[in-house]
Length: 499
Image (cartoon, rainbow, N blue to C red):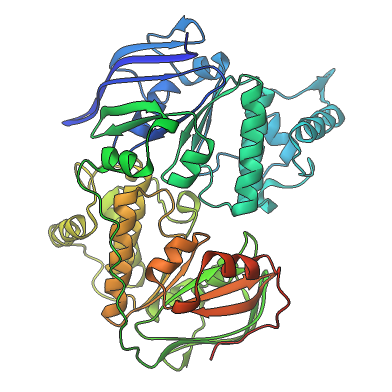
C-alpha cells in the first residue's frame, strides 16, 4: 500500500483547469520524480497535498488515513514537509531558532536555549551536516539553508518530503552531499517527491516518475524502464529537438571594463567584455562570481577598482547602473525580484517606473499592449496580467522578470542562473533569446553552474576560484573536465586576466 495515494484530482482557477483527473501515488521509502513543464500542474498538485490550496474534487489518502479537506497544519502534523525552491527560512533568526520555531523548548517559564542548541547540533551530526547552531541564517549559503529546512522537517518526524527544484543553486559536490542524505533517509523508509528539470539528476536519484502536462497525468512508471528522451517527449507533448542555434558573430567595441574591481568575496578582477559578446561566469558555489555580478549591478558595495560602461565610470548603486543600461536577473527571485503586493503587469513595469523621467501618469492600455508582446515573445502563461504575481508558476515568474528588463532596453544583461526552475522547453527559448540579444549587439553575462548551458550559448567562459579569475576559456576550449579542474583549483595555474 502506498504511503500517498491521490486519485481523480481536479482543481481550477477561474477558467483555467490546473488539474484534470490526476492520479499520483508514492511508495514508502521511494524517491518519486514529479515532472512537467512550467504550468503543467506540479505546483498546484503539491499545494493541494500540503493544504495550501483547497481541494476541489478528488481523494487523498496519506499514511492510511483519508483527508477530504486538508489544511496546512493538518498535513504538517500528518508528516508532510514541503521544502520549497525559494528557501522558507527566517533570515533574522539563528539556526537553532529556525529549527524550533513555534515549538520552542522551555525550562519553567524560560526558553531552554542550551537544550535547543545541543539538540540541533545532534540532529546535524546525524546527517553529517556542519552548520553552527548559533549562526545567523542570513549568513548561510543557499545549500546550507536547504539542509536546514530538511533537518527541521526531520525533527518533526516528517514521513514524506516534497523537494521543489532542490539543486538549482548547488554545485556538484553539494548535490552529491544532498543525494547521499536522501539515500540515507530513504533507507529509513522516508519518502520523497522530487521536482526537477535536470534529467541527469532525475535518473541518478529517482525510483519512479510521473509526468504531468496541461494539468493531466501523461505517464508514470519506473525510471529504469525509460530514457530521458522519452520523458522529455511526454513533458513537451511534441517532437523535442535540442537545437544548437549558436552562431559566431562580429563583436563590437568594449562595452564593459573592470579594473582592479574588488568587493565582497571577490578581489582585483580585470575583465573586458565587448558589445554582442556572451560571457559565462562559473565556479563552485561561493567562488565570488555571483557577488561580482551583484556588485556590478550596485546591489553589493564596491570596495576597490573601477567599472566602466562604454568608457564612462558607473556610480550611484542600482539606479545608476540601470540608467547606464545595466539590467540584472538575480538567482533568488523570491527575495530579490518578486514584489508580492503588485500584480503581474505592475511587476513587469516597475523598473521602467523607477527610472523614467516622463510623466507620472501611466497608460494601462499601452502597457497591456506591450505586455501582450512579451507574452508572445517569451511564451508566458497567465490568465490576465492583472492577476497577482504569485498566481504564476516559478518559471513564468522568471519570464516576467526577463520582460521587466527587456522593456527598458538595457544593453548589458546580467543573468544570475537564468534558467533556475525553468522547464526544458523554456530553457531552449531562453538560450535562443540570449543568442538573439547578442546578435542585436547587447552584452550578455550569465552566471551558471551548468557547463552544458555554458557550451550552448557562450563565447567565453570565466572560471572563478576563491574570489579570483583563475582561467578564461575561449568557446572551442570549453569542456566539462577542464572547467571542473579549474573550478576546484585541481590544477596548478596562475591567475589569468582578460585580454
